[in-house]
Amino acid sequence: MNKKTTTKNDTSELNRRDFLKMGASALSLLAVLEVGGASLLFMQPRSLEGEFGGTVNAGPVDSFPTSSVTHFPDGRFFLIHTETGGFLAVYQRCTHLGCTVNWEPDQNRFFCPCHASAFDIHGDVQNPPAPRALDTFAITVEEGQVIVNTGAIQTRDEFAPEQLAYAG
Amino acid sequence: MTKLKERLLYTDKDPADDRSRMRAVANNLILHLHPTKVPAPALKWTYTWGLGGISATLTLVLLITGVLLMFRYDASVERAYTSIQNLETQVTFGALIRGLHHWSANLLIVTTFLHLIRVFLTGGFKQGRTTNWLVGVVLLLLVVAFNFTGYLLPWDQLAFWAITVGTSLLGYVPVFGGAISNFLLAGPDVGQGALRNFYAIHVAVLPAIMILLMSYHFWKVRKDGGISQPIPAPTEDKRPSRVERLTTIPHLVQREFAAAVVLITAVTIFAMLVPPPLEELANPIHPPNPAKAAWYFMGLQELLLHMHPLAAMLLPGIALAGIAAIPYWDKREEDIGVYFRSKIGTGTALIGAILGVALPPVLVVIDEYWLDLPSMMPGVSTLISNGFVPLALSLGGLAAIYSLFRVVGRANRGEATVGLFVFLMVSLVMLTIIGVFFRGANMALVMPF
Ligand code: HEM
Ligand code: FES
Image 1 (spheres, protein in one colour):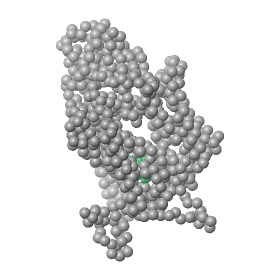
Image 2 (tube, rainbow over the protein chains, first blue to last red):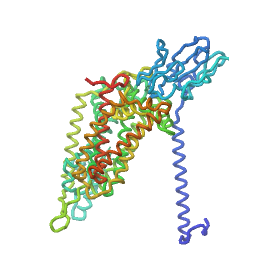
Image 3 (cartoon, rainbow over the protein chains, first blue to last red):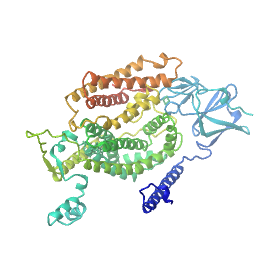
Image 4 (cartoon, chains in turn purple, blue):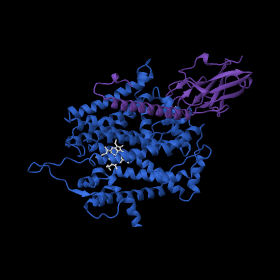
């Protein structure tokens, strides 16, 4: 370390001490960051294929009649086949405070028993307190099978036709 | 036996001369936690109500029963519920140990809350006690965190949905909320990952922090010169009068011991008479109606029914920050150790309490049946119409109450703060009562009888 970089009163001995102190602090900081970072990564949520959080094969396209809603409790989503033939997978979790919504076929709506939010067949809010439409999962159609990726939850304010996935 | 006890409490043999007697005192375990002498008035029940000591005793009961429960509990979605059922029906004294743990935990929330109120009302945060006040606020949050993480462990319907609703609240905290909730739950919703995380936090992380912080809290009480006391009135000859001082052993220690015994007996009897609740096994597909949070979050939940969640989180957040900041606001040291600060302070507290009892229910009913802010402001985002508008109105109301005390009541800063503080605390209690007893299916207002 260069003497000239220090303030005027410092002796060279203090200088070395300062250097060691600084070095030790920097190394300690680095160690803390490393341990913290490693712990955070260690505790990262993990998920496996076929379970919730992975990709779920919902079945062949033709097994879902149009205007139908099918519940996949293990995947925690409802698969909606709209009258236009598009697929939409909505997360079963109410956007208000997380209760599980029910599909009520006679009312043609999703209903949440916790604070009485209601959603239409596209997941749009019919009745608050839910602040936004039901969340969705990405759908791909591969070799005639409907594949739902439950790993990434997609939030939306309301339904838009682009959210629908079509076979072929 | 006595030998052993001496060994544990002292590091030296019997003191021979004055000097070694001094050392014996300095090496005594009890006297590491307490000063050697305490002012006689500080021992009066009606000053501290023993609330700090009661909280400490409950924490000890919780640690012991908690470790016992760990031997009989499985933190897995398949077995958690059965292991609790086994405790209740098969394990010898299982129901008692679980009852002790459950009721002590709930009581601790109450006593910690009351302890905070007592410290505030006597100005116990003054004369250099700011740090310990802040440590205390963290301790209160820790107690709540303990209860919250413990709530999930039985894995019944109550546990599952209370934690679902509770963690969903986090989702409304801007920027970090979603990430924190995702991290805590080890995923987007409550499942095996969440149970395992909550268990580890409940039995390892929180106890470690709690023990460190509590030890610090006690040590700091001592270093701050013991608990707060009124400044003695000057005597005739203008010299400050001397307060009688008593030795800690036996005067203070005996009282603490007596209080602890009475408390533990009372909690044990209660635990034998009232079994802690256990509902049906958690069912992620069918939430109960109504799905309520734990009782100590019911005040927050009630706010949620009236405001956008972000506003409902901000309001108590601001209040908590305000409570933490009290030592920086009320700095008048002359009135330390006097309940409610003064006559005027007693008056503001009384008015604050009356307002606190009266206002929240009235506002709740008005908002429930007549007031509909979003439809009064069509085209405005609900975040504003149902969030920032009621938030601003509430904060405005608090400011108005404070100014009322200052201007009309001619209260000084401290006395006005007492009134506002009492109003807030009583309001919280009222909201909690409404949430617990007056909310039924679909969270509609109902009569409890
Ligand atoms: C686990 C929770 C807590 C425990 C076990 C605890 C324990 C204690 C004990 C044993 C005392 C001695 C006086 C007394 O018994 O009242 C004390 C004093 C004190 N506590 Fe706590 N406490 C806790 C939480 C809190 C909270 C939530 C606050 C406030 C934010 C707080 C702030 C203080 C202060 C400032 C003092 C000194 C009071 C004075 O000098 O009058 N503590 N605490
Ligand atoms: S959680 Fe669905 S309405 Fe509140």
